[in-house]
Length: 211
Image 1 (cartoon, rainbow, N blue to C red):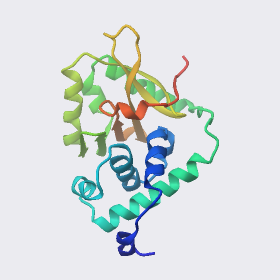
Image 2 (image 1 turned 45 degrees about the vertical axis):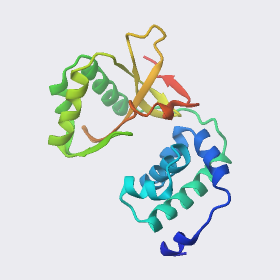
Image 3 (image 1 turned 90 degrees about the vertical axis):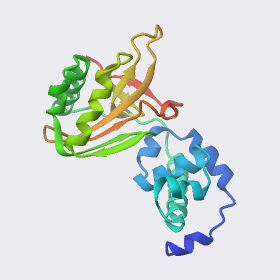
């Protein structure tokens, strides 16, 4: 089936897929491609129309329908698999890098944090913006520097190594968001910050990292 053919598809299972997407955990969403993940979230979780989704993503109607169709199919497949997957064990180097990033962030040593990012680093502040390149992404850390309603700790979200965000001013100490950081050798090449996407925490399995 070509991408053009996708414009003619009417999916009678759309409402069921919307319920499935709303119940899906982060682990499932992160296994979709970026295009599929974006469209499924916009249509099935946030309730945008296909045309509104095209305006947000800049994709054609054919590409949007194709991504939605394939993303829904992948979520159905993932939903049929066992839900409980043991959290991966980090090797010593991965854990060292993650803890160093968290420690520097909590110490508000943002010059040292900026020194860790690669020249071609990419940032997604989920539900807000995207940035690319060392100069542009460096401005992102200034936002955290100006506020104090956060404290970071290493952990896992749906079995994936993550940086948990809590508000130290709240007595319950609940996780309010998280970050996913990817490395190339000793440099950060990708940051996904879910601080402004609390829906990603719904029904997510969250655990702290020992030590």
